Figure (cartoon, rainbow, N blue to C red):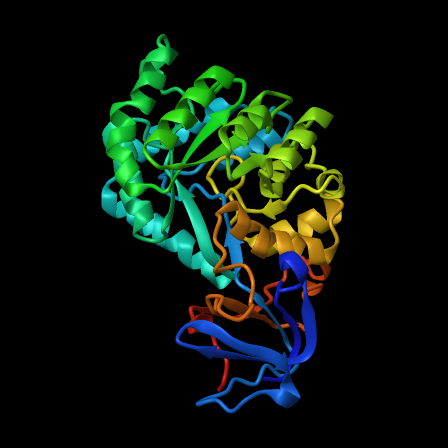
Amino acid sequence: MHIGELVTNDGEGGAFAARPDAALVIAKGRVAWSGPASQAPAADSAVDAGGRAVLPGFVDSHAHLVFAGERSAEFAARMSGRPYQAGGILTTVAATRAATDDALRANLARLVAEMARQGTTTLECKSGYGLTVADEARGLALAAEVTPEVTYLGAHVVPPEFAGDPAGYVDLVCGPMLAACAPRARWIDVFCETGAFGADASTAILAAGREVGLGARIHANQLGPGPGIRVAAEAGAASADHCTYLTDADVDALTSARVVATLLPGAEFGTRHPYPDARRLLDAGVTVALATDCNPGSSFTSSMPFCIALAVRDMGMTTQEAVWAATAGGARALRRPDVGHLGVGARADLIMLDAPSHVYLAYRPGVPQIAAVWQAGRLVAGSIAP
């Protein structure tokens, strides 16, 4: 009760919507009612928001959290002028292969808790730092301990042992590795980029995943123009992620195929590439999501508020558009109608800001503003007096 601004995202067609001086009722982990505070029905217990803003929990639809090691030296080198290249991933592959299950699990738990403290209530988690049948299956098993949104990314890069036989590695990804990994995954992904996988290989990998019931996602057009968006559209992908370098034809393909463009400004911050032009996509009618791309190489941030601030400052988004993209947009990228909004029947995942408006997420960048976080109606981070 006494919510200064309640962001519900339950406008027409699921558009951004916010109500002043509002209240929200939760029953059995779901939103049961919302409306003016003066009309709130009786409840067994109440939390007084004291005029603070309440939003849907963030939906981070792109993260790489199962890994070992760190790459701070690589980051420092990029900041001094060395260009980013996909091959840096192999440093993390070596460390991850050498790590124990317990070490990987502990690092994963630390990052998930870090995300929760910053308002993320739904997250996607990829494999991709094992690149052997056993290590990819291990990564997915660990990811499944923390989220149902598990993505098989055996096609991250070609590992050193297949450097002379990339076609053989594609066969492995589409064959024995897929067979071992599919039971633990909901999605399949591929890094379609120079230095990783081309159009034909990416198409084959996504098709193999589709044959065993996995939904398609794709890393596309991060480091330069390429075929990734076309591959995504033809594969019926739920999301094309990065979308940094786009032609007019790419934008048209995203629009016509209704592929969500998941933008990852943390990666541009960490690689010095230009930020994606979100304004261009939004004006063309493309659905846009924001995600962290949390990984130890190109985007070592778990903060959705940071990504919102970057999107508003450097990508042409309004504060409403950026918050919607970080909540409802992420839910659409994961095809999850139950999260990303606070309409009646939605899962009661919500965050309370220590601020009166969602605008503060961009207005006060870098300042901790998440006062409390609830998942399915249960307080999981922060504290608030009833």
